[in-house]
Image 1 (tube, rainbow, N blue to C red):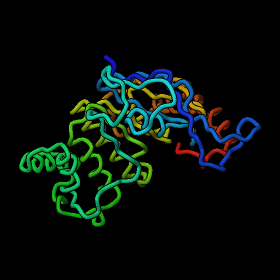
Image 2 (image 1 turned 180 degrees about the horizontal axis):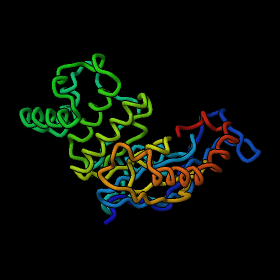
Image 3 (image 1 turned 30 degrees about the vertical axis):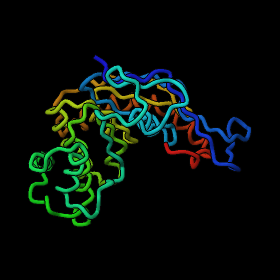
Length: 278
């Protein structure tokens, strides 16, 4: 059964007064970012989005989250049109976005405070999610006392502590070193397989997209639409050595084949790169 339904979604950004960009050989102050995106995500599914830089992946995520209003088209979660941030949805950004004055435990508790969860219950729940991410013993550390990987663990624990039915993740591991990134991918899958949250995950890494996903959504260059959806028929739970298998390599080649021309198109359109967030 579908949890998220995106239908005929279009988004155009109006630039500030006096600003313009070159598009299709002419100057314009309107930048089309999404062009007729259609996508459904099933309950409990893990979907990854890949596409060229500037293709509108993060904008699509923002629209699903209710943070950005579409120019036209609709987004629904459980049959309800999204017009504002949805109570069933949590968002994890590339930047850790932790409160520097709160401890790891206090940061996770915050998501429960805003829902008026009683103090004792939110403390127990926050500890539970920190434990899930291997952060027992670090509850009283402030963000400045944690590594980047630990900070992102706290951010994801905070998002999951509110029991979201939809988890949106915008390149959450992009700033991490390769070893930490691989570890967090496995930890995220382990927890996702336990709680069954629907996940939409933006990434620039083909390997990451394959390792995590039930389906990979390949986006075109700007203005973005869905070029291809690739089901990933690999075993779950995903073994750590999966990336070295022939099947994984075959998916890597298939995704790159779908992306190659779109990346080339995007490289010829860098004049728009600073006009909007990808």
